[in-house]
Length: 64
Length: 219
Image (tube, chains in turn purple, orange):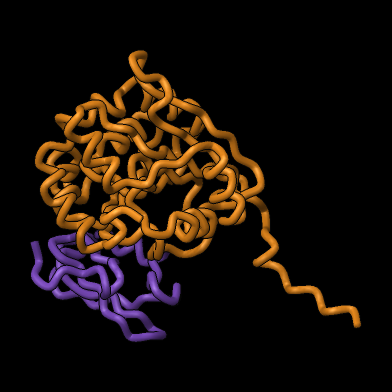
């Protein structure tokens, strides 16, 4: 995902701002990392460039 | 209540459905119907549009003919993989995994929102419609295509067992409960079955009662 998407993303649970933690990037493309809610602390993974913003109760245990 | 109203079951269902989806899809929601719905949607080049439940990307493809700023959200990784094969993962379309009823976007992010062939699987459609209203700018369009009744007998039986079907009266109730004031329903379908889909185009209101301060009781 592009870093600029941080402007429009929020926590799906409480709609508060997210903080980006980058693990791997390729120019402005974030390939692996985490989005962490600044309010509730819930973490959303960025996997292979795709942010997984499913609420925790809908996440699969193992990545498909 | 259909069995897909359990989201874990919906995911498992899609894991298998995604294998055949594009083959069965043209029978229930074809390019002609898509073009008709896109005309009703009325977006312009440059509009930022969210496709909720984008799945394998059939509608996404049509949206890209009208604007280059398309975002796609789906809960199923298996459906999304098909879409990535068509558009690339990070090139033409911005993709997200997420839940229609709990969208991960700020208020007033999009100019318009499209969702086709997805509402029949949401446990709480009104919650999703209210979320659509929140993320679309006032005056923007929200288009929802409802139950695309499958043409094959096998899938008809499956659909009858698991999906939500609704008529115009129920659509009125859902959109009103979700805070919309202005909307129209259009029945769509191929010539052999011209009313298999219900397409609703709603306009996001400037403000709704729940956004305003409650009036103090006059006692």
